[in-house]
Image (tube, rainbow, N blue to C red):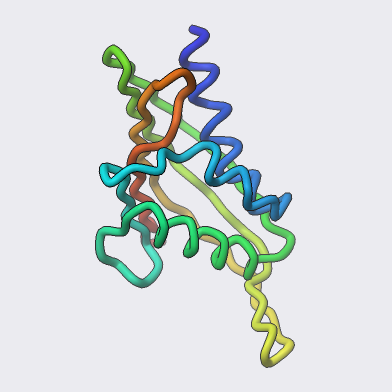
Length: 134
């Protein structure tokens, strides 16, 4: 049960970054390795490595003010030092265009899959986020 609690904390830390804007934690919870990868529901849609993922996460979270999220229907499976987490993810906030000084309320209903690996602590090795059409 301790491993599951640690994994949930890593996932929460990832999304709490959207609230706190403390981007340094993103490097702490994701493994800086050639094996790291991510897919997302926002461009660019291709498979991304560690550095590109971190940069895009910072850009995404910094452009949404009043960010909030809800994680539901969590399923965690642990296979030795590998953890797989799937859940429904609801995100909302104000998408800010700093150049035009405008904002747009957004609500994103989606699904998420995270793969974590345990090396002393649990770290994200891969994630895939996608929207659910309403």
